[in-house]
Length: 234
Image (tube, rainbow, N blue to C red; front, side, top):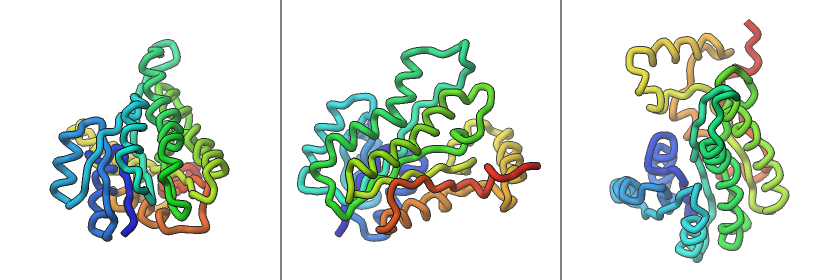
């Protein structure tokens, strides 16, 4: 049975990946900053839990030691949004954003490389805003764009372990529920901005993750999962 560690696996897209992986017969480890939340989900789906905070390298190294008997796949969905204009940048929040998307996953690679099985993989999460600059998305855009290079260079560094990234567009994953009545308008606008005429669903992302885990001839790539939004001209 292959073992998969899902970092950020206690909520949203991470939890959806963990649920599907458990259903598909993987030995799932739910990794999260909030250990209680990770343990709650793990108990529900027949998995185990470990505390991992991408902002704290000691938790990453401790988790690698705890899982030292081997890991096949790692999926990391961590993020720390800092959606402000350049003149409003806060250095600490900027650092947290880069740590969640770039530095943290690289430190995961550092500590888990000795226990990752050579036929295994790492799946990182980017986002369409990395390729669509706009006011107020400076930090999110740069950090998401950087993930493409993290995947490419980690793939070369960790070979034969495969490293890839997924770059979703607007996904109805629950993250937009906080908008209340404005959520529908956001999703409708997103749908018109794609070539396929709809917004993304959680299942679109989960299906892509599960495919990448077994796509043994793909490494160093970023899979754009946004309905062709980058190519829509009008």
